Image (cartoon, rainbow, N blue to C red; front, side):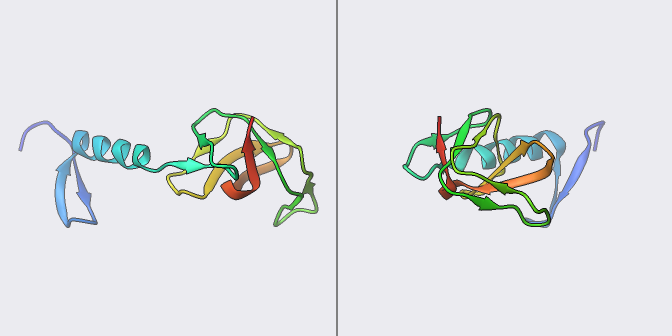
Length: 101
């Protein structure tokens, strides 16, 4: 075997090197195209504006239309965007409710 670290890949059922696993994970996240409500392509670090008032589950807060969300992160899902906002931890928005700034 050698000095390489190996990781068990559940999808294939085989042991693969950590370098191969990292390359495969990077390719998977780049393959997904996330588009906003008008069809603009979104990327990590973009700023978006809400196009609809959204109630946040688990809090009594409502995010109003026109609110700017800075530094979004893509999750690997076509419709989900991970972001931060004042006082809300772990906020995930649907791409259909945002527009790129």
